[in-house]
Length: 365
Ligand code: V47
Image: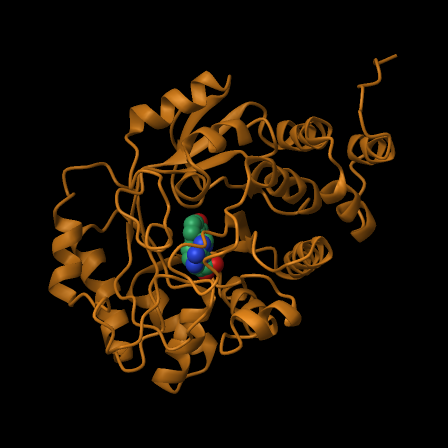
């Protein structure tokens, strides 16, 4: 007989039985996990699920982030990055500036360029297509993970095309997959207060599922640590899980820790380490049909990302090099990490580092 693990919170015992039997967790189970103060118990459960999928492997990527413009018509209250066109801090990179940024690092073994920007009111669709084409011409081997579902819907409006035709055109120009941003929290209550102009949850899910049907993989996120309740977090995860049951194209889920500085919510506290680990662990347990759970070290810090490898996460993202969205909202983390820093974090956590490409093909292990 296997010895029974010890849980400080007895409410976790029935969940242990379910996790062991690989039974799907319910909404109530998700709420129990979030409400539990037994972080080690929740982490133990998440680690069971993580090890079943990935053993002690921990993924990282040699990547570069590119935030081409912060001009945005959405005006989300949680965002310090987006600016109106006339704002002194507004910027839009020209195509030669974008290619120059990538050319600067041609000597590095980058496998992914991660591209996210604001919803610019009047850049033509050709700007985005040309961006992808010229980056592909410069670095044909690199995977372009570009434009969140919110940006894709905006581009479809700009171009007067359906979402499917927009995605087809982007794919033809070199788009490899879609990053997970823009989902925020699906709760209508929170969105009415924080981002009333933003693409609806139905719209976000529909773009993601359209992409899946066209053979494009996408990621998913949840922005936590602002106005959302525990139940709203669980509902967000369940909607993602249901969408994944239908189309199966989500690769990674990334909980994003809210950074309050320079936003319209500057008095909210920063997220805590407890909540950062809890979100990763609950995500691993609830999203049983998502292959990967990523701890984005830019948002929670390299040390917390390292610990998360024992709390359900199997990926700590990558080198990044330069990031603006979180840093404009006060992030104190570095802008980039070297490969040896990533390896050190992973190995010290007792994990086996695996360098991956965007779609988790192994490059080096
Ligand atoms: O959608 C905005 C978030 C997202 C703040 O797919 C904020 O691998 C914290 O898409 N504090 C964009 N977060 C980032 C994104 C992303 C990041 C990392 C990995 C992946 C991936 C995708 O950043 C936005 C929004 O949810 N955000 N403001 C803020 N103040």
